[in-house]
Image 1 (tube, each protein chain N blue to C red):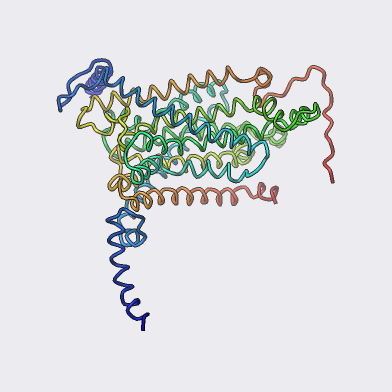
Image 2: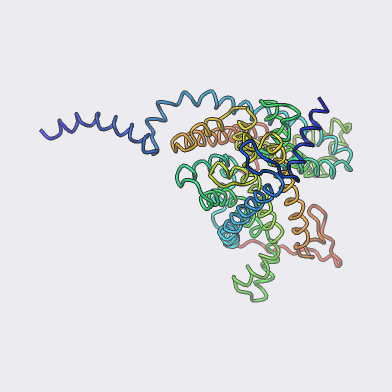
Amino acid sequence: MLLLPLAQNGGFFRDRSADTCVADNGVCPKWAIDHFDRYVDPFFEHLQLVVVSVALGFVISFALAVLAHRRRWLVGPVTQITGILYTIPSLAAFFLLLPLTGRGQTTAIIALTAYTLLIFFRNIMAGLDGVPEEARDAGRGMGFTPRQLLWRVELPLALPAILAGLRIAVTTTVGLAALAFYAGAGGLGESLASQKQFKTNVLLAGGLCVVMAVMLDLLVLVAQRLLTPWSRARTV
Amino acid sequence: MLASILSDFGDAIDFIFVSRESRGGAEVGGGQLLELTKTHLELTFTAIAIATLVALPLGAWLGHSRRASFLAITVSNIGRAVPSIGIVFLFFAILGAGFWNITLALVLLAIPPILTNAYVGVREVDPESVDAARGMGMSGWQVARRVELPLALPLIFGGIKISVVNIIATATLGPEGGVVTLGDPIINPSTYGDAGRLGASIVVAALAVVAEVGLSAVQRAITPRGLKLTPAGAPRRVRFPVPKRRVAPQP
């Protein structure tokens, strides 16, 4: 007898509470589910910014690290220059680049790439420097040329350190790319700023950034497990 | 092309040193930019001071007792991924605009590097030094204060340095929460014009670089002399090479 009107009212109340939830600026799961589609495009825009910047940063710093590995005097200057690029706040970097490259993805990607260089360079150098001298000797004893030594002995042994750098670079870049909308490059930051006083929106867009970072981080971790089976054998 | 770029930067540098009238009729640039810089630094130092008071003792204690390594490392990993602008907007949405609300958001962003570095710094202190101190009859508190903290100082200070540079960058978002920092010309270019935006960007970038270089110098200065003698990676020079005796682990 009592349950029936309550059950009937249940639907009515739930609908109304969803409306008042948005009006009260609460945390509204229903609104989030209903409007999830508007976050899909910014999500992939964001992902594209991250992947392109990290890939470019990796290629550049890999070349620099291999060069500096042969010519040690380069280590100091490269570390200092990439260190300054790393220190410049990304928001300032966007607007410093604006007169040169204009608004858009190019500006954002250049700034984000510059930011990853120090992380990669330091980790690749640390990995190469950490190769045991015995392993190098063994390689030389097998008649490896310096190039073969690099590709067959040093780089495989440096892989764990390089991938650790990749994990740091990826998570950092996901966070920084949230500022890319100031440079006109879109991404989840744009969603964040579009309704910055609405808690559900801020939590959802910010949460998606964290989800993206965790997913990419796990991806690198899995790659590390697959690429360096020997390190897993040691830890088990 | 080059001429227009040079004139953009020239105009921006002019904005930094000489005040001018904005489109709204207010005075911007020059001395007013100095005011913005003052607020910017106030915000940064308040946030860093609070974050250090919270994170340094906690991290050092966790490192000393070798507890909760998972917590100390996870905090820094997640901290990196959380977008700073998300935290600023969230605090704005929950608490509204105001100096202390933004300070609180910045404190939250400043804690992870300080916590992790304090933890790692204290934990990575040479166990033989700690053993020696214990053998001299020092209590846990004495070991922490007279052995672990001095030896961990460079790393602890390094964490504070990372946070200072990060927060100088993030305080730029202050105007999004109602605090008029150096970010104001960057975020509201309609008032300040393009020269104001570029000028403020130059000042923010310079502040960050100066903080990084200056604090690095301080870090080198406070490094205990004993640690400076053995740069990382170099083999330790022992004047009387005594073979290290390894104590067999207890079964």
